[in-house]
Length: 113
Image 1 (cartoon, rainbow, N blue to C red):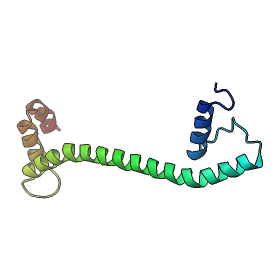
Image 2 (cartoon, rainbow, N blue to C red):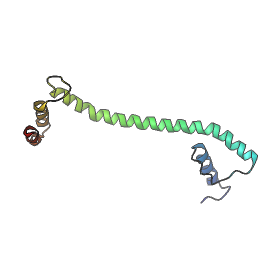
Image 3 (cartoon, helix red, strand yellow):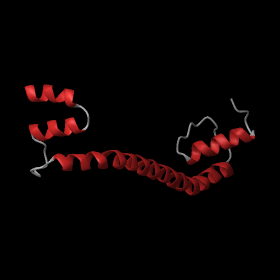
Image 4 (cartoon, one colour):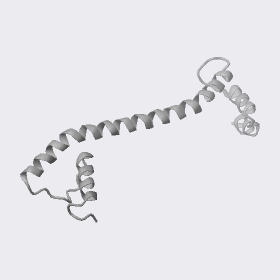
């Protein structure tokens, strides 16, 4: 718990106000304090929104780069075995791709279907 009027209490209040969490655990008593909180909110809420957006864009870019690194080689391998360029591997093409990847034991199950 934070003591009323302490520095940590002030930072907690400022963070909950600017992040719009607003726990409401520190009631404002004076008109000047309430006016300051409103003015503070008008400045800091857009700043926090910008920060959230920046973090979200960086996270999304990181995730997308991982997806591209993983899917591009898979797509290139798929295209190499899609001999008829149909956009889908038929059973023979699929079995050939499995053999190429060292998964020949799976081709027996595929061929049996």
